[in-house]
Length: 342
Image (cartoon, rainbow, N blue to C red):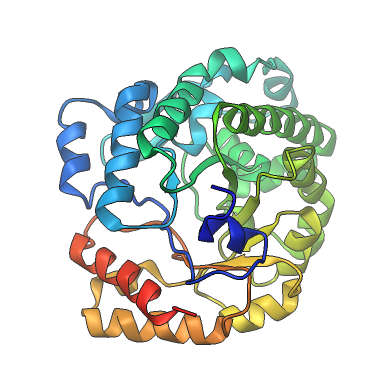
């Protein structure tokens, strides 16, 4: 498996074709996933290792991608903190007991991911068996900043005003919160690797709301700590969105591969982060709603910007939209393989 094109690309080694996988490749756009969800709620599905493995493997096989990613959610790591995590129908995740003050932060108790998140590790083990060595499996976690923002905002946000208020007004409490989350994330990722994940991705989906100076001061040390000490044989993908102003700082924080969104050209981003690190991306997921000819054109443009250089993993700049036609996703995967043959 170490010679699989996806893992070779993560190590910036030559590959026969550019590997491709897609964020949220197991999701509502796929009929097989919807059939499972008719029987299980979202959190139920996440908590059911066999079902989580089933949707993971089904999506990877149906699409023909070069890697599977374990079906879970970035907020599962927050549930054992007792913050009242709920996935409300149509409204996304809600935390009924958000963290808004230094006192709230200090009430959060560390826990052992090996116990509280054992169901994720079991899903990883089942999925590895089902994949039967054909493609690698990616584990993942939310990054400390994005997790902390959910804790403070209590759900989605446009401006992250509550998050930034705590960060600026109570910096000591902020650093305590980030330190707690970094330790949990690190343990969680280590557990997934021990269970069989062959690569991991750190999702910092919300960090693009920060100025570069704030990122370096309030976030970078904890992002680095979240990735510290993982096996050098296990590639780490460091992904975020809206981070055109943070690329150099993200590279400083760490990761074998830096994931980017569609708001910056891939070649320009790669020059900025340095050609001695891999890059992942970066098709706009809305492109998958376009005609197949346009999907192929844009895929070809991204591949041309990568110029066949070792270290490119093709992906979207964020997750697949629920209204995306499955055939369009398959067409993208086929196009990437066809157009990137060395």
